[in-house]
Length: 297
Image (cartoon, rainbow, N blue to C red; front, side, top):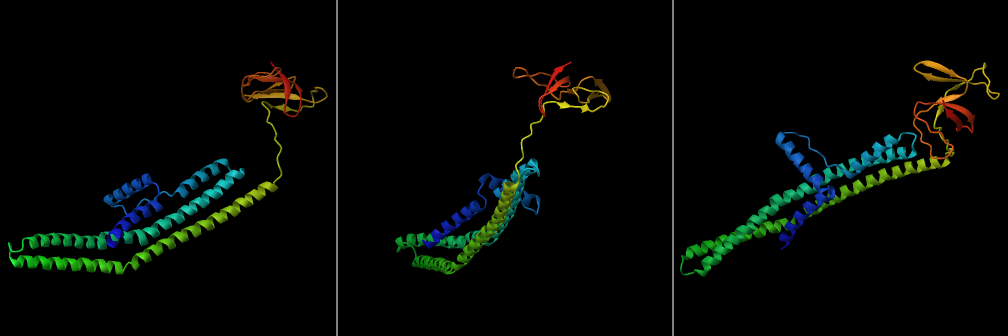
């Protein structure tokens, strides 16, 4: 009975341990196919499992770079992304360690020791049936045949019992393999904790820097840009102006300040001026730093 339970336990442990290390079944199937193809084509290098920490890290780094160095969130994403990539490397080491020192020995146990015990048990069952059959026909068949059946049955029984006894007596080997698995998992979690603690310190430092930074005031950008150049020869409302519109390498002088529209604008409120990209607008009055009154030529 213990052998039956051990057989089931080993089969289940092999399956669940692989799921623990590589939880995505689609990736596992793809990985198995690629590695099989590598063996067929004679390639030595095998494809590694894409760790979720590495995938998340790549995502963080990509958008951190897009946000740029002037974005506090972007810099934080870069920090977090690099940490996630480090955790993925530690997870790869866990995969290799557990496979070599836990999964592979269990696989060998299943393929060799347990298979050999199973062979002895099947042979014992066959000889038991043969012995039962000949025992029922006692007197109808030669006694020598019955005797041989008994001897073969007893031989198989001893072999099966001895193999099971030796296996169960040496199950401390499986305990050692399990201890190695736990040690590898513990090392992985310790390394991950150190990486995350370092990341937490860096992020907290960025929060402190951002909190102590002076707040910036919002400065609205004007819809149009002016190209005013001061000229001592002209006066307008007590201020010297000389407007110039630069187009195709030449300058065109007008008697009032003016500007050129950068894009189309549709008026939404009464009093607003609508214009098209490239149109010249004569400026008639400055309301404040960024707003003007004007008219189209």
